[in-house]
Image (cartoon, rainbow, N blue to C red; front, top):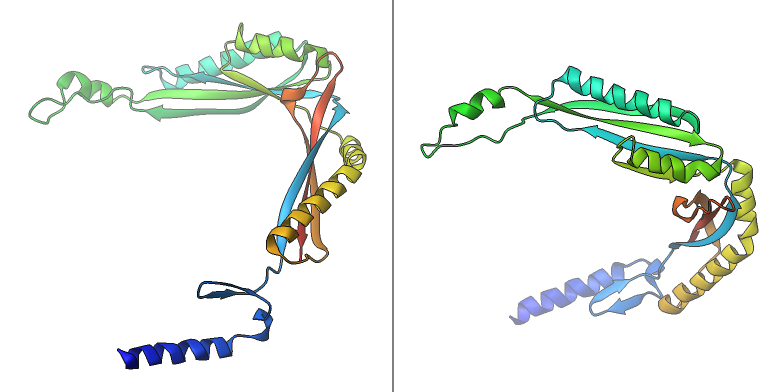
Length: 238
């Protein structure tokens, strides 16, 4: 036992002696020795109001029928698209952004006590059913009509759901980021101070910074045409 203890102690001493000088000043937790943190990354976000110029409304339509053929599903999807295009063209440009038809087994097998499949389901299982879905998008420039389009999609046109995106021009994006630049800078400095307090060491200069801005469609005000844009900054300190 004593020989085993001495061998372990000598091995540990050799490992400590071999550690590079870069580990100097690091912390110690139990028997684990680690170097000081070399970099920290985090993000901050702020919101600001911007004027929306147009809305793109997305919607999904699906066909689910346990006895439909591929041709029947295609006809139903095309009929839904043509109806939507006729009803919504007065509000803006209507595009079909996606359509898919896929097969599935329409019936669960009925298994008898002897483990065989009941005859009445064998034939039906051998006949694949087809389902499908359709994706459309409507570009609306008269923002006062956004709610009307969404209501039509979910009622008369029988689409499953709809959601709205507000694409922002580059000039609007840059303007929003410029408006909140001071707030973003302050948040970065405050967050940096928190990390320094937790780590017990000072962080260096910013080694990388990137920003992104997007409009939150859920905050759109149809009366004013304003929407909240979220400006996010991603920073790395070394």
